[in-house]
Image 1 (tube, helix red, strand yellow):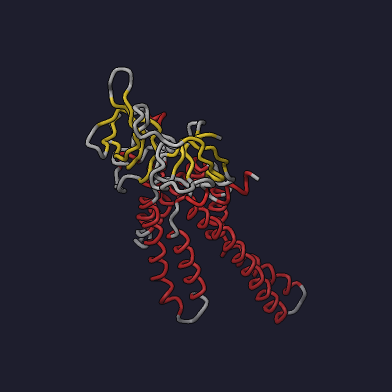
Image 2 (cartoon, one colour; image 1 turned 135 degrees about the vertical axis):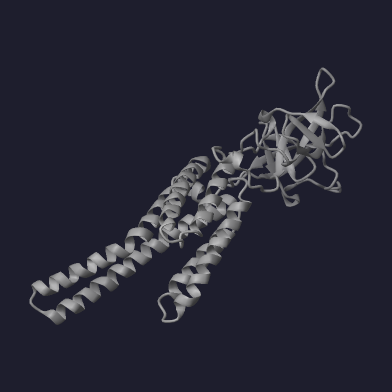
Length: 332
């Protein structure tokens, strides 16, 4: 494919998309200054990860050309304008944003971008080939509560996490818990759709079901073992059988819970680009293991609240959806 180097680690391909590249991918750089390749025409291949590789320069840039694009950085003002670092304002259309992904085009105020600045036939300054480089500073804006984009998902999850911290309140705690679960259900289901994932929501729902009903299932299986022992006419055998059934079923439930919870948090980490989700999972596991010891419960409770804080921090920073290894596995 042919394209043009934009001068900041990206190539604008002839298909209208931008491709990231590294200097090591330039095959005929020669004695050219790698920092002065802006507007250089190249031919390149696209890797499985969507990067530009095997790049060959086919036509050097002409710094005196009046038609050469001007690539600058700026910030979206939120009303169809971008404020460029050169002090000018540029009109833009959302269709020019090449990595908008799952964002609401009406909620981009404050987002950092770089773009190609040009002038239309009417002499107006316009922004083309816009690429989001950094999201706006996270805020707690309740106007996003009904939004179906990532900001709406993020807000509902933050409210859900806050309600989880109130579940200790007598009587009202159960109400807060139910509302938190409903909000989390809606949020993860929507995020699953936005990310195009087939596993995120499934792993979350299985993990939740095991968390809520796993203990009861183990108890029922244990009583079932006791019942078999009683029918066999051995009281001692009934107790031993009940203990064996309880231990085996408990281990099985724990393994399944670990499996689906791990994959849920790991995929969240990849989709958000925030490892805090995975650290929260590790903290939860540490708390669960400590509960198996005599004095571990004293430490497990603080670890629970630490995991909640880590999850809140991760959701607070969640501003855009990245590609995950789970999506690539599904595609294959």
